Each structure stands twice: as structure tokens, then as C-alpha cells.
Length: 490
Image (cartoon, rainbow, N blue to C red; front, top):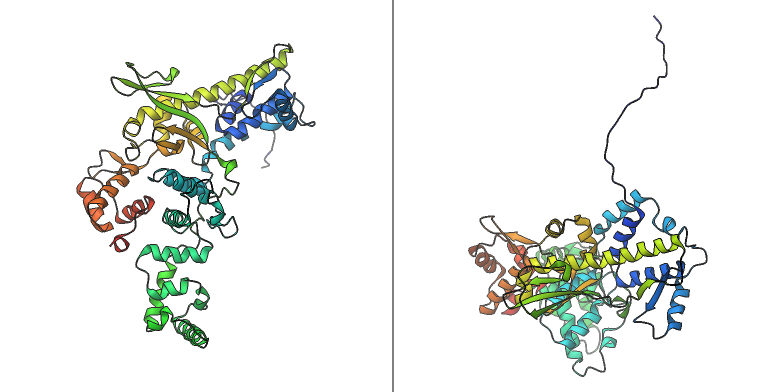
């Protein structure tokens, strides 16, 4: 029996819901994620390509001639106005996917260290010097191929001495990750060993410029290398005594030393990206300022940037345009297409400003304890909480507050990255609430002001207070606030 094969056409009705982003939505989200410098360039590009847009003033330009020079700089002959948007943004779905995944980019080492510095109680001179040192680090977290630390001392600041420089270096080296801000990675291992406090004396000798003696890392051959080095050293005239002269070299000791060295982190900055640009070009964008003002309001007013503080005062949140030029519609241009594009761009700029202010209001609303009492009083806050409060997508909040952007908030207590206010935490013993890591660090600091407690004792005290936390987490928090271990403090 033969079988016949044929092609048939059949109509099928399928109902599905697909969300596609318009070019306006794509541009609005793109502007929201930009820092001030990127947005400044974007404004000049649009103004140079669209005659319906006019730059009124620019905080970085002292004359109209300078504004024209800026426009000429950003004007490209090959980028006509009519097709600029389609070439820049491309396919809507692909660009949306790229935006949704932008939060996955790693935090820079400089941002991570600056967050810890902003939590430290230091003088203005020490803060300035620490910041210069942090932005002078290369991708390995070292300064060996960058500017010499001594060259970063500000001659206009008489209190910035070599003693203060040594203090700043020590402070940064003890931050998380331990061992950055060293000349090279070998010195980083030596610094990590000193900070650990339990390093064998032989390990400190090997890591202090004699790492080659561990090649190969076999106890019997390492002992031979050490004895040969010691004999060669003392053959020199006027050779001083070495640390290993008083150490009895045994295979057990060498094996213990090798095991200890292997616990150290050979590349402490590996999990972070690097910002190796010059210090002056990496000043943070101060996008919001939060001030406490006298006066009574009965409820939060996000549209006016006002949040209730207490019965006598409120918080005023203001958007800071910073280095952004002022833009408006040109009164002398009437082409409908160009005017519509110009209005769309201005609306997207307004959307960026209002979104940032609304998110700032939500942050202040949730973190009133911080704005009342200062660092150490953060509540646990997630981006999802802010998104739900404002009725927006969580990714929109991330574009304003991700750790890899330069958006900062100026407060009474100092300058903080927007990401700082989103604090994780640990569970209480009963599991009913979460306690922020910032609050735990303050508790650790207060306990250590009372006595020289070990990390194990601190863990016990915190557990007794209803904070479920492990000893290694306590040690990590202690290091992040720049406090040595109990052995070094004794």
C-alpha cells in the first residue's frame, strides 16, 4: 500500500501579547542610565544635529563662541539628523535586552573602596589623599606602574605629610579586599600576611622580597634554598643578621609556611573591574541633594521633592544639573519633523530628572533613620521595594542606582553613591526581620570600644542580641571598618 505525501495550508488563529519598546522609550531609558558627562555629549550631539534645539547656557562655557565650539566638536558629517536615531539604537528588542542586562557589569575597585572610605571618620586632608591613592590604582589594585604615592601629596595642604601618607596607605590596605594599594602583588601578599596577624615568621621573611625561594614549593628544596641564601648572604662583608638566622628550619615549619601563603589572595582586585582614568575626570555626578528644612508638612510630596521628617521639619530633595547645558526649542525653526524630535528629546530629559528625583524621595522615605542619625543607621532596602512604591520596573531603579555608575547623593553626612542606600542584611534569630550590614558594623565598632574582643566573642555577643551571623562575616565587617584583629590590637 503506497502512502502519499502532500503539502497543505491551514489557517490558525493565535492570540498573544508582545511588548515592544518605541524609540522614545529606548531613548528615555538610555538617558536615565547615563552619567553627566555622557549626557552632556548626548545633548550637544542632538543640538548639533537638530536645528530645532538651542543651547541657552553651559556651566563649562564662558561665552556663546565656546558653546559653538562644543557643538562643532560633537557634530559629525556622516551622521545626518534624519537617520541618527535608527543607527544609534538599532533594533528595539535587542537594545532592550542590552539595557536589562546592564546591571550585571562588575563594580569597579575604585567604587568599592570609595564606599568604605565614605563610611570612615577621617579629616578632609586624609580623605583627599586616600581618594587620590584609590584612583591611582591599576587593574591589579597596585600603584607600581602608576604615579608614585609621594607625588600625590598636595603641597597646598601642609597637613598632608609623609606620615599621613603612610597612614592612608595602611587604611586602604586594610579595606576590603585586603592587600590593595601596594607597589606590586608580591608586596600585597606580604601586607595580607601582616594584617592576618597569625603569619609564621618564616612566611613574613619569604614574602618580604624572597618569594623566589619557594621555587619549587617542596619543603626539602625550600630548606636548601633558604640555607644557600643564608650562606651567600653572610659571605658578604658587614652583612646584618637575618630573621631566618634565629629560626630552626624544619620540613614541618616550611610546610606550615607554604600552607599559610597559599591561603593568601594572589590577586585581591580580580573580582572587580578597574577605573584607571585620571582622578579629575572621575569626579562623581552629584545628582541629588538632600537638605533638612524647617516647616511642617502632613504627608510626603514626591512631586515637589518633599519628605516628612518630624513635626517641625521636612527633607527637601533637589536635582542638581551640574555640568549639563541648558536646552530649549529654537524660536526660529518651524520644520514639524525637527520640532517633534526636539520636543521628544526634551521630554525624555524631563523624564530622566523626574525619575531620579522620585527615586531619591523613595530612598529618603525608607532611610529616614540614616538621614536623621547618619551612617550606621541604614535599614535593609532593595531596589524592588523602591520599584513597587513608584510603580515602575526594577530595572529602571537599577539604571539610576547600580554600583557601576557615578550617580551620587549629597547629604548632611557627606557624599554617598546612590547604591549605598540599598543595603543588604542578615536575619534576626527569630527570622522575622532583617538587620542591615551597616547597623551591624556600628555595633561591632561600639563593642570594640568597650574591650579588645576577638571575632568569636563578637559573634557570640551579636547572636545574644538576636543577630544571626557567622564569625567569618564578623571578621569581614571588622576589616571593612578598618579595625585590626584582636592580636594586633593587644
